[in-house]
Picture 1 (cartoon, rainbow, N blue to C red):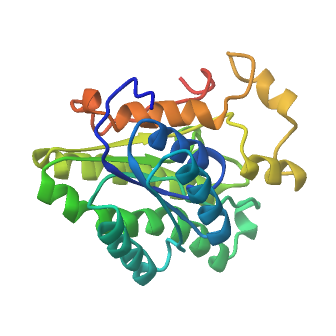
Picture 2: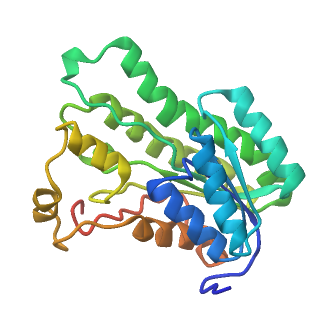
Amino acid sequence: MPNEIDATGRVAVVTGGASGMGEATSRELVRRGNRLAVLDINGPAAQQLAAQLRGSGGQVLGIEVDVTDRAAVDEAFVRIRNELGPPGILVTSAGVFGYAPFTAITSAEWARVLDVNLTGTFHCCQAALPDMIAHRWGRIVMISSSSAQRGSPFAAHYAASKGAVITLTKSLAREYAPHGITVNNIPPSGIETPMQHQSQAAGFLPPNEQIAANIPMGHLGTGADIAAAVAFLCSDEAGFITGQVLGVNGGAVL
């Protein structure tokens, strides 16, 4: 199995791992020799991807998990430890988007977006860290958004949740560096995903051509672009990189 960066065979967990950037990351981490747990609120999709990757020789679990449900997250990590081993890699890709004028955002919608994007990330990091601390090695990569870097009109709740994920990244990086754990952040922009297509269909985002016109590289990125950056940050070679925000955006945010 090709493994350009390292062949550690560690246990990786990807939340939101059955679609979009999460799916691409799941595929890449297995391709590089890691055992994998795909966590996704869409249980059938997680199990289907896991079965497909097992068919290619990977050791993969697909688990239905709502990251806002702490008991379900803890239960999933118990299963991961029992069936794959202690997790050493965590990629938090689960997320939801919200779109509304600021004054029209309801308290319930504000809470929902923060609950998934921020509190869900908190739950998964807390569940994964004890094993990383025990083994004095760990890699956490949180997926945020360029909205957190430049703001996002009509999506203030989404941008705020992702901005908090960036500051959570930096806080955990400083706290857990003495334990051999790195914590980094990737804020994508201009990546073609199912969530983007849904937002375009609802009229929240312009068509691809208009988006690409504002990207210096002149085209949209793919989940594979995110997956490659995640895989590097999860490698042994990236052991002196922590607390960083690595934009994968074709130059759209400098």
